[in-house]
Image 1 (cartoon, one colour):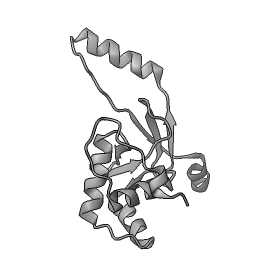
Image 2: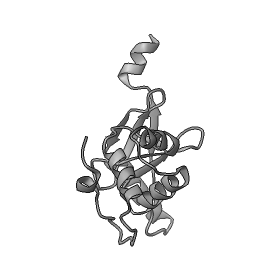
Image 3: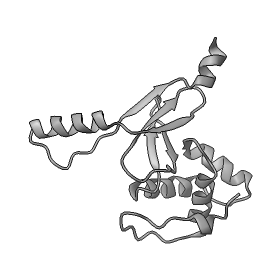
Image 4: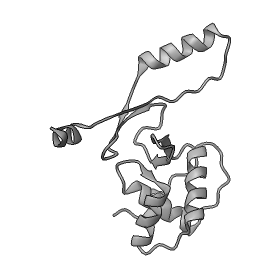
Length: 145
C-alpha cells in the first residue's frame, strides 16, 4: 500500500484546500483503487483501514477533489456519483461495466470533433461535455453465458 502523503497530488485548478489528515486518507484510499467507487463504499473502506473520517467529510473531500480535477466523477444509472483517480490527466471518457464497475479510459477523437462542430454551428463557446458508456466487461459477459 502506498503512503497517502507521498501520493497526494496538489490541486490542478488553483484550489486553496488545506491538506488535512482526512484529505490524505481519502486520497490514499483512491490511489489504491482501480475502479470507480461511491462515497459510501469509500467511507466503508476508510473505516476498514482504521481511518476516522466521517461520511459528510468524505462527501465534501470527494466533491472538492472533483471540482479541482483530481478525480473523475460519473453518475450511475440510479444517479449515484462514483469517483476514481484516473491515470490520464487530459480530457477523456469512460466505458463502465454495469455489473462489476470495471472502468476503461477511452479516447474519442470523433466525439471531440463532433462536439466542437455542433457547438460552433450554434455559436457556443467554452463548451464542455461528458460521454459515459455502459456495458458488460468480457468477464461479466462470460458469466452470463
